[in-house]
Length: 299
Image (tube, rainbow, N blue to C red):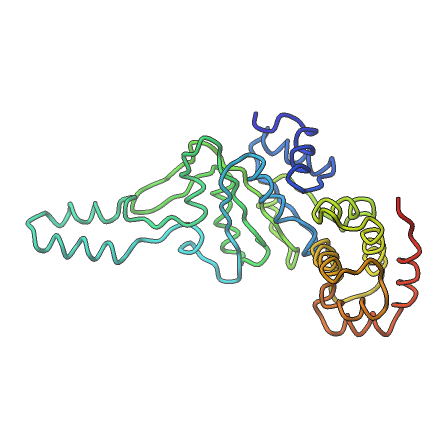
Protein backbone atom coordinates (compact mmCIF):
# COMPACT_ATOMS: atom_id res chain seq x y z
CA UNK A 1 0.00 0.00 0.00
CA UNK A 2 1.19 3.49 -0.83
CA UNK A 3 -0.47 5.03 2.24
CA UNK A 4 0.64 2.69 5.00
CA UNK A 5 -1.53 3.90 7.89
CA UNK A 6 -3.72 6.71 9.16
CA UNK A 7 -0.78 8.08 11.12
CA UNK A 8 1.42 7.93 8.01
CA UNK A 9 -1.13 10.01 6.11
CA UNK A 10 -1.24 12.65 8.85
CA UNK A 11 2.55 12.82 9.08
CA UNK A 12 3.25 12.97 5.34
CA UNK A 13 0.50 15.47 4.57
CA UNK A 14 1.75 17.73 7.36
CA UNK A 15 5.24 17.56 5.83
CA UNK A 16 3.58 18.92 2.71
CA UNK A 17 2.07 21.72 4.83
CA UNK A 18 -1.49 20.37 5.08
CA UNK A 19 -2.78 19.86 8.63
CA UNK A 20 -4.96 16.74 8.58
CA UNK A 21 -7.14 15.66 11.47
CA UNK A 22 -7.66 11.97 12.15
CA UNK A 23 -11.20 11.63 10.70
CA UNK A 24 -10.07 13.00 7.32
CA UNK A 25 -6.90 10.87 7.37
CA UNK A 26 -9.08 7.83 8.12
CA UNK A 27 -11.33 8.52 5.12
CA UNK A 28 -8.29 8.90 2.85
CA UNK A 29 -6.84 5.62 4.14
CA UNK A 30 -10.13 3.75 3.68
CA UNK A 31 -10.49 5.19 0.19
CA UNK A 32 -7.29 3.40 -0.75
CA UNK A 33 -8.28 0.14 0.94
CA UNK A 34 -11.83 0.04 -0.45
CA UNK A 35 -10.94 1.65 -3.81
CA UNK A 36 -13.76 4.16 -3.46
CA UNK A 37 -13.87 7.87 -4.29
CA UNK A 38 -13.95 10.50 -1.55
CA UNK A 39 -16.66 13.16 -1.49
CA UNK A 40 -15.57 16.24 0.44
CA UNK A 41 -18.20 18.83 1.31
CA UNK A 42 -17.86 22.09 3.18
CA UNK A 43 -17.94 25.83 2.81
CA UNK A 44 -15.70 27.46 0.20
CA UNK A 45 -12.14 28.09 1.36
CA UNK A 46 -11.84 25.35 3.99
CA UNK A 47 -9.24 23.30 2.09
CA UNK A 48 -11.21 20.68 0.16
CA UNK A 49 -9.37 21.10 -3.14
CA UNK A 50 -6.00 21.13 -1.38
CA UNK A 51 -6.62 17.59 -0.12
CA UNK A 52 -6.33 16.27 -3.69
CA UNK A 53 -3.37 18.51 -4.52
CA UNK A 54 -1.40 17.46 -1.46
CA UNK A 55 -2.37 13.80 -1.90
CA UNK A 56 -0.84 13.90 -5.40
CA UNK A 57 2.34 15.39 -3.94
CA UNK A 58 2.49 12.75 -1.20
CA UNK A 59 2.03 9.92 -3.70
CA UNK A 60 4.40 11.57 -6.21
CA UNK A 61 1.85 11.13 -8.94
CA UNK A 62 -0.04 13.27 -11.43
CA UNK A 63 -2.98 15.44 -10.41
CA UNK A 64 -5.72 15.45 -13.06
CA UNK A 65 -8.30 18.14 -12.38
CA UNK A 66 -11.80 18.43 -13.78
CA UNK A 67 -13.31 21.80 -12.87
CA UNK A 68 -17.09 21.48 -13.02
CA UNK A 69 -19.44 24.25 -14.09
CA UNK A 70 -23.00 24.65 -15.31
CA UNK A 71 -23.37 23.15 -18.77
CA UNK A 72 -20.26 20.96 -18.70
CA UNK A 73 -20.64 18.01 -21.04
CA UNK A 74 -18.78 14.92 -22.26
CA UNK A 75 -16.63 16.83 -24.75
CA UNK A 76 -15.12 18.92 -21.93
CA UNK A 77 -14.96 16.17 -19.32
CA UNK A 78 -14.29 12.91 -21.16
CA UNK A 79 -13.21 13.13 -24.78
CA UNK A 80 -13.81 14.60 -28.17
CA UNK A 81 -12.61 13.66 -31.62
CA UNK A 82 -9.70 15.51 -33.15
CA UNK A 83 -11.71 16.81 -36.10
CA UNK A 84 -8.87 18.70 -37.88
CA UNK A 85 -6.71 15.58 -37.75
CA UNK A 86 -9.59 13.43 -39.01
CA UNK A 87 -10.27 15.77 -41.92
CA UNK A 88 -6.59 15.85 -42.84
CA UNK A 89 -6.48 12.05 -42.83
CA UNK A 90 -9.54 11.86 -45.07
CA UNK A 91 -8.08 14.36 -47.55
CA UNK A 92 -4.79 12.47 -47.64
CA UNK A 93 -6.68 9.29 -48.36
CA UNK A 94 -8.53 10.97 -51.21
CA UNK A 95 -5.16 11.35 -52.92
CA UNK A 96 -4.45 7.66 -52.47
CA UNK A 97 -6.35 4.51 -53.19
CA UNK A 98 -7.28 3.22 -49.76
CA UNK A 99 -10.77 1.95 -49.02
CA UNK A 100 -13.40 4.14 -47.40
CA UNK A 101 -14.02 1.52 -44.72
CA UNK A 102 -10.34 1.45 -43.75
CA UNK A 103 -10.25 5.21 -43.38
CA UNK A 104 -13.42 5.28 -41.27
CA UNK A 105 -12.02 2.65 -38.92
CA UNK A 106 -8.78 4.55 -38.61
CA UNK A 107 -10.17 8.02 -37.91
CA UNK A 108 -12.40 6.64 -35.15
CA UNK A 109 -9.53 4.98 -33.30
CA UNK A 110 -7.80 6.04 -30.07
CA UNK A 111 -5.05 7.86 -31.94
CA UNK A 112 -7.64 10.43 -33.06
CA UNK A 113 -9.08 10.95 -29.57
CA UNK A 114 -8.48 14.08 -27.52
CA UNK A 115 -8.49 12.83 -23.95
CA UNK A 116 -10.13 15.07 -21.38
CA UNK A 117 -9.63 14.63 -17.60
CA UNK A 118 -11.91 11.63 -16.99
CA UNK A 119 -10.59 9.56 -19.91
CA UNK A 120 -7.02 10.63 -19.13
CA UNK A 121 -7.39 9.32 -15.58
CA UNK A 122 -9.01 6.07 -16.72
CA UNK A 123 -6.31 5.29 -19.30
CA UNK A 124 -3.28 6.35 -17.24
CA UNK A 125 -0.51 3.77 -17.25
CA UNK A 126 1.72 5.45 -14.65
CA UNK A 127 3.33 3.34 -11.95
CA UNK A 128 1.28 5.16 -9.30
CA UNK A 129 -2.36 5.84 -10.23
CA UNK A 130 -3.12 9.53 -10.72
CA UNK A 131 -5.25 11.60 -8.36
CA UNK A 132 -8.43 12.63 -10.16
CA UNK A 133 -9.95 15.79 -8.70
CA UNK A 134 -13.56 16.43 -9.71
CA UNK A 135 -13.87 19.93 -8.31
CA UNK A 136 -17.17 21.59 -7.37
CA UNK A 137 -19.39 18.79 -8.65
CA UNK A 138 -22.40 20.66 -7.26
CA UNK A 139 -21.99 23.24 -10.06
CA UNK A 140 -22.61 20.62 -12.76
CA UNK A 141 -26.15 19.71 -13.79
CA UNK A 142 -28.08 16.52 -13.04
CA UNK A 143 -27.34 14.95 -16.42
CA UNK A 144 -23.59 15.19 -15.95
CA UNK A 145 -23.85 13.90 -12.40
CA UNK A 146 -25.76 10.92 -13.78
CA UNK A 147 -23.03 10.26 -16.35
CA UNK A 148 -20.46 10.10 -13.56
CA UNK A 149 -22.22 7.09 -12.09
CA UNK A 150 -20.74 4.77 -14.74
CA UNK A 151 -17.28 6.20 -14.24
CA UNK A 152 -17.36 5.99 -10.43
CA UNK A 153 -19.07 2.57 -10.33
CA UNK A 154 -16.84 0.58 -12.66
CA UNK A 155 -14.15 3.10 -13.63
CA UNK A 156 -14.94 2.64 -17.25
CA UNK A 157 -16.06 4.85 -20.11
CA UNK A 158 -18.06 3.81 -23.14
CA UNK A 159 -17.19 5.42 -26.48
CA UNK A 160 -19.71 4.33 -29.15
CA UNK A 161 -17.17 4.19 -31.99
CA UNK A 162 -14.59 2.24 -29.97
CA UNK A 163 -16.35 0.41 -27.15
CA UNK A 164 -15.82 0.34 -23.42
CA UNK A 165 -12.47 1.45 -22.01
CA UNK A 166 -11.81 0.19 -18.49
CA UNK A 167 -9.12 1.35 -16.09
CA UNK A 168 -6.29 -1.11 -15.48
CA UNK A 169 -5.70 0.58 -12.13
CA UNK A 170 -8.26 2.77 -10.45
CA UNK A 171 -7.21 6.36 -9.92
CA UNK A 172 -7.54 8.03 -6.53
CA UNK A 173 -10.69 10.11 -6.89
CA UNK A 174 -11.59 13.19 -4.83
CA UNK A 175 -14.86 15.03 -5.45
CA UNK A 176 -15.54 18.37 -3.82
CA UNK A 177 -18.81 20.20 -3.27
CA UNK A 178 -19.64 23.59 -1.76
CA UNK A 179 -23.19 22.30 -1.34
CA UNK A 180 -24.80 24.92 -3.57
CA UNK A 181 -27.26 22.11 -4.34
CA UNK A 182 -27.87 18.62 -2.98
CA UNK A 183 -26.16 15.77 -4.80
CA UNK A 184 -28.13 12.65 -5.67
CA UNK A 185 -28.02 9.67 -3.33
CA UNK A 186 -26.82 7.40 -6.15
CA UNK A 187 -23.63 9.44 -6.46
CA UNK A 188 -23.12 9.67 -2.71
CA UNK A 189 -23.45 5.89 -2.32
CA UNK A 190 -20.42 5.42 -4.55
CA UNK A 191 -18.24 7.60 -2.34
CA UNK A 192 -16.84 7.81 1.15
CA UNK A 193 -18.08 11.05 2.68
CA UNK A 194 -16.37 13.69 4.81
CA UNK A 195 -17.46 17.18 5.83
CA UNK A 196 -14.64 19.71 6.26
CA UNK A 197 -15.76 22.36 8.73
CA UNK A 198 -14.20 25.67 9.69
CA UNK A 199 -11.15 24.85 11.81
CA UNK A 200 -10.90 25.22 15.57
CA UNK A 201 -8.57 27.90 16.94
CA UNK A 202 -5.85 25.34 17.62
CA UNK A 203 -6.03 23.83 14.13
CA UNK A 204 -6.20 27.23 12.43
CA UNK A 205 -3.14 28.39 14.38
CA UNK A 206 -1.21 25.29 13.28
CA UNK A 207 -2.27 25.88 9.66
CA UNK A 208 -1.18 29.51 9.71
CA UNK A 209 2.21 28.83 11.30
CA UNK A 210 2.78 25.88 8.95
CA UNK A 211 1.75 27.67 5.76
CA UNK A 212 3.47 30.96 6.60
CA UNK A 213 6.91 30.08 7.99
CA UNK A 214 8.44 32.84 10.07
CA UNK A 215 5.19 34.56 11.00
CA UNK A 216 5.25 36.14 14.43
CA UNK A 217 3.54 33.66 16.76
CA UNK A 218 1.64 36.33 18.66
CA UNK A 219 0.36 37.89 15.42
CA UNK A 220 -0.75 34.44 14.23
CA UNK A 221 -2.72 33.96 17.46
CA UNK A 222 -4.37 37.36 17.11
CA UNK A 223 -5.30 36.69 13.50
CA UNK A 224 -6.80 33.30 14.34
CA UNK A 225 -8.65 34.73 17.32
CA UNK A 226 -10.09 37.46 15.10
CA UNK A 227 -11.23 34.94 12.47
CA UNK A 228 -12.82 32.68 15.08
CA UNK A 229 -14.80 35.67 16.36
CA UNK A 230 -16.05 36.91 12.99
CA UNK A 231 -17.28 33.40 12.08
CA UNK A 232 -19.68 33.67 15.00
CA UNK A 233 -21.31 36.68 13.37
CA UNK A 234 -23.94 36.71 10.64
CA UNK A 235 -22.32 37.39 7.26
CA UNK A 236 -23.34 36.72 3.67
CA UNK A 237 -20.14 34.68 3.30
CA UNK A 238 -18.12 33.77 6.37
CA UNK A 239 -14.36 33.70 5.71
CA UNK A 240 -12.61 30.35 5.39
CA UNK A 241 -9.05 29.29 6.10
CA UNK A 242 -8.04 30.52 2.62
CA UNK A 243 -8.99 34.05 3.69
CA UNK A 244 -7.12 33.62 6.99
CA UNK A 245 -3.95 32.75 5.08
CA UNK A 246 -4.41 35.64 2.65
CA UNK A 247 -4.88 38.09 5.50
CA UNK A 248 -2.01 36.79 7.62
CA UNK A 249 0.33 36.88 4.60
CA UNK A 250 -0.75 40.45 3.83
CA UNK A 251 -0.05 41.54 7.41
CA UNK A 252 3.42 39.99 7.28
CA UNK A 253 4.21 41.85 4.05
CA UNK A 254 2.93 45.07 5.63
CA UNK A 255 5.33 44.46 8.57
CA UNK A 256 2.47 44.47 11.07
CA UNK A 257 2.80 42.72 14.41
CA UNK A 258 -0.45 44.00 15.92
CA UNK A 259 -4.08 44.44 14.91
CA UNK A 260 -5.03 48.10 15.06
CA UNK A 261 -8.32 49.40 13.67
CA UNK A 262 -6.77 51.28 10.73
CA UNK A 263 -4.82 48.22 9.56
CA UNK A 264 -7.79 45.90 9.92
CA UNK A 265 -10.14 48.23 8.05
CA UNK A 266 -7.60 48.68 5.25
CA UNK A 267 -7.20 44.91 4.82
CA UNK A 268 -10.80 43.72 5.22
CA UNK A 269 -10.80 42.94 1.50
CA UNK A 270 -8.51 40.00 2.28
CA UNK A 271 -11.16 38.57 4.61
CA UNK A 272 -14.53 39.42 3.05
CA UNK A 273 -15.60 39.29 -0.58
CA UNK A 274 -18.91 41.14 -0.31
CA UNK A 275 -19.24 44.87 0.39
CA UNK A 276 -22.23 44.36 2.70
CA UNK A 277 -20.08 42.09 4.90
CA UNK A 278 -17.31 44.70 5.08
CA UNK A 279 -19.83 47.39 6.01
CA UNK A 280 -21.40 45.13 8.61
CA UNK A 281 -18.16 44.40 10.43
CA UNK A 282 -17.16 48.09 10.36
CA UNK A 283 -20.50 49.18 11.78
CA UNK A 284 -20.88 46.27 14.17
CA UNK A 285 -18.51 44.83 16.74
CA UNK A 286 -15.09 45.60 15.27
CA UNK A 287 -13.80 47.34 18.37
CA UNK A 288 -14.91 44.48 20.63
CA UNK A 289 -13.40 41.86 18.33
CA UNK A 290 -10.10 43.75 18.13
CA UNK A 291 -9.94 44.12 21.90
CA UNK A 292 -10.49 40.41 22.37
CA UNK A 293 -8.04 39.47 19.60
CA UNK A 294 -5.24 41.69 20.91
CA UNK A 295 -5.69 40.37 24.45
CA UNK A 296 -4.20 36.95 23.59
CA UNK A 297 -0.73 36.10 24.83
CA UNK A 298 2.03 34.14 23.13
CA UNK A 299 1.80 30.42 23.76
